[in-house]
Length: 231
Image 1 (cartoon, rainbow, N blue to C red):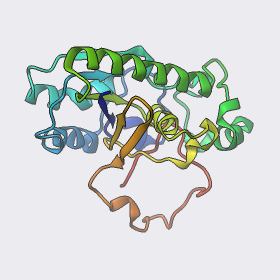
Image 2 (image 1 turned 45 degrees about the horizontal axis):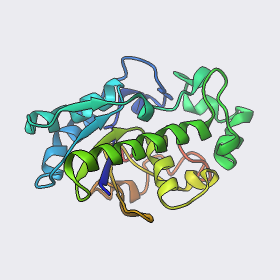
Image 3 (image 1 turned 120 degrees about the horizontal axis):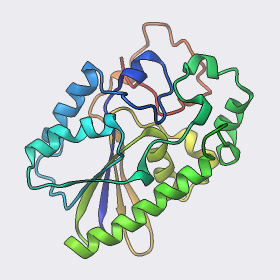
Image 4 (image 1 turned 45 degrees about the vertical axis):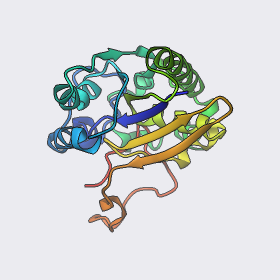
């Protein structure tokens, strides 16, 4: 079965503004995100790609634009099933103000029971993304063979939920996983089990450095939507 390269979109204007973008239209890459996207072709140099699939949201399409320009033979295909979680009424709101919402504790501690008002349950988000990957595994294998590699550009919570599925982890544990903007996560699928080959690889250890704000924020909470990565 194929190997899947999961790329989280580059840092966006919503990431730097501390806003939960969700499916809000018009959210673009910021300057750092554009630089991250520009570096992607070199990071993937020499890796043959049988397909490139993307969430239809602008920040994902912008992330893959340099790679597609570098590989004109690669045709981009979009799939709604790997689009961002539908955060409903939370979309477009400041993450700082969502911290005090009663639902946030459920999102952090028991995400399989979390359903966003006016949006979707997190368990349904995971189910659609997992179904999409299984579907694309079959398509890519049929097109290019069992040893093929393909790429998907998606969002933080989507990628974390796919990693949890690959590791046989319950969704309630997926907040223990972190994937930074434009990070590369690789899952090799086989007939009997998936293997996690890379997780959130950016080649950048800046996120391990002490923060200028002294580490402000709750260390026990995961960033809904994936966070902004290193400064």
